[in-house]
Image (tube, rainbow, N blue to C red; front, side, top):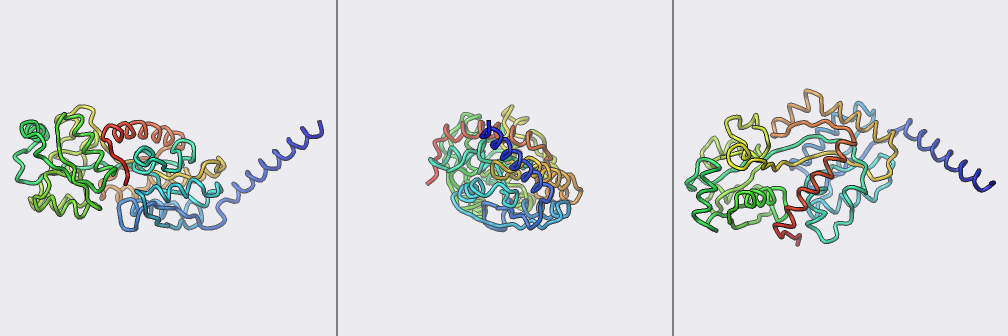
Length: 322
């Protein structure tokens, strides 16, 4: 009986300490780990969100870039960090939905090792081709590929990237054969597309805008289920040729598993306020990203759904990280 009372007392003290810490949280700057190098789309998104969250929390959110292994190294470090709310991570389709299958031992479970804070937004891609390809619609591109099996080549920003798997998903849905040409990033991939060294590319929207306007590349469709304000005249691939096709990248903020619920709630409230602000909406829209506020539970469901979808595509493609 004495041991039982002692156990209850210890649990009560622990619960009180957790509640007290949550009430005082945050009392110092928070680190938001971006699992990629500075300057890319993920980095920009994290900085914009962190900047808008800081005033609501009363503490600065410091961005820390830790690249390597497609983002999996830093994401693993976030999973193993102290669950006190002072180390957060930028979660995305690559790290939470693709990498757990792409890498033989990624070192974390996207469903069990994190407390989802909430979504920031979702970003579609645009299918672009070299002007020499005799296709002016997605249907014509598929017809050309079927009439010329293996002749089309597609660039990617690397094996297992969201861009690579968007193309593989397109290939599966369309029932066509294409040759994959991986690059170390989007810039060299687009350069070779302009030069005619590859046939097509699933590009993020900002770098494609001027190239399409100048006629250096031709845009055929977007990968979301709704048209993009950046390319309002372009149909979605789903409406143009492949019903149900959707290849969008999701971004959110995660914390280590075990982070107290009151702290998660505070962070979610600050994130939702940031995501719904006009300033953040405008900044994200300029990059072709649709703001997407959510609860932690909704983000958890999103992670589960996305990992299920993309792990199947990774397996079917045969992609493996080097």
